[in-house]
Amino acid sequence: MLLFREKIPAGWFDKIVSDLPAMLIDHAHLERKAATSAINLEKYRHTLRHVHTLNAIAIEELQHFELVLQLLEKRGHKLRFTPQSPWITGLMRGIRHGVDEQVIDHLIVASLIEGRSCEKFQILRDRLPDHDGELAEFYGSLVESEGNHYATFWLMACEINNEEAHDRLDHFLDLEAELMRQPHDLVMLH
Ligand SMILES: [Fe+2]
Ligand SMILES: [Fe+2]
Image (tube, rainbow, N blue to C red; front, side, top):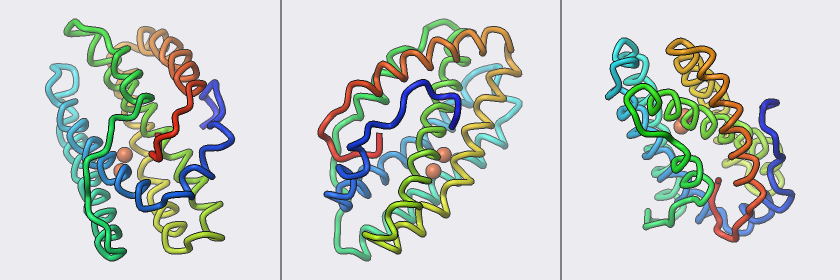
């Protein structure tokens, strides 16, 4: 994802590899939240016309959630509570209130989360084979889907108000870079 203004921290991959079950549990919750987020995006008057597209994304995310759950169960791990990602919380806090403001911000934040997921899944696809071939293949299989979600949400934001979407993207890219420079020790994808 060329548009991001900060690189993924150098230690991110090693941290993830140190506890793959914890990463998978966090990933399961991430897919669950992606499904609910797609449905929540249907509440705005500007996005109602895309209800079928958003439903399709929600269904796809639920399928991803199920796939991660099956991987966890196969490996003898149970889904458990995980803390919120400071990076995601920080982005969500940047969403403005107001009927027309909120929808554009919500779409851009959703797009950036999908974009970073896509970028990180590519790293896992490329670097995990030395550690866990099955997971490397699994993450490779998700790259295209998350990349499509990233583009779909961004195009929806542009369709509502192109100039405003670009202004807000500029704002959120700075915020995202700032959040990326605040690494944490939690084993989670974001
Ligand atoms: Fe997904
Ligand atoms: Fe996604």
